[in-house]
Length: 315
Image (tube, rainbow, N blue to C red):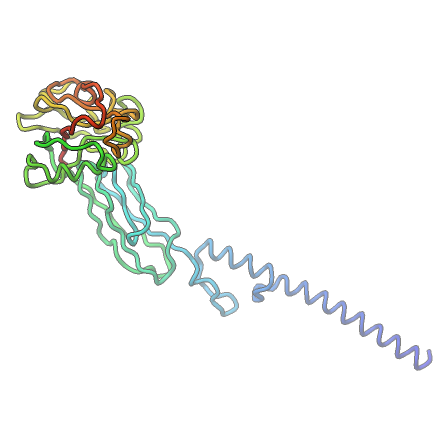
């Protein structure tokens, strides 16, 4: 082989060797868990995020600042609906009756502060939070405790002294009238027995107590008006049989209810937003022990005719 051919052979051989080396190195890089560009690195990091494993890879920490941790804890004594918890005053969580635990899942990074508070109390109960404040430290928080206990038993209800227009904005907004009325006893928190199916609901199905929203009667609780005890609710916070004493003095009061505790969606004065004659409002009759009367005993009136009283229930 002459010198020229020898030089060409050597050049081609070196070139092929370089190609082989580059191909082999590319394969190596693809499987290099220390190379952030490699598939292996990405797979390892994803698995570590899922496992919340902050141990370094190849002496480097890539993920500890982006792993999300959960805030959770125990719930004791909750046998009523309506409890809502808040996290840092922003995220709301509804906790169902009978729940033993609550979870704000995968929501805060390490170093973040957390504050769990009661946003809405369940009917007839007062819930308090312990160990609700702190900082996330590279692990889930599970030591928060929510304890609920009855606020009253028996609980009181009263018929308002004044009548109120049908357009406070929602069923729940009638509550402020209960607290400001001349018949308010001076202590305790009271809510209006008025529903709209949006901010307050007693039952989705007839006499069942399902789908409740901020309902005013607590389960298995005795209630009384100024004349004496009227009866005890069932396990879903409803009266389903005749009361032992009339509900209130002879009266008309806004309810928005059907006689079976469901929401009368056609008779809520446009979700209690209107005092126009174009809408009607459902009313109860207190001078009775029958459930159909106390919920919907009067024929609905046009919303522009009269202000009506309210039944206010102690919480």
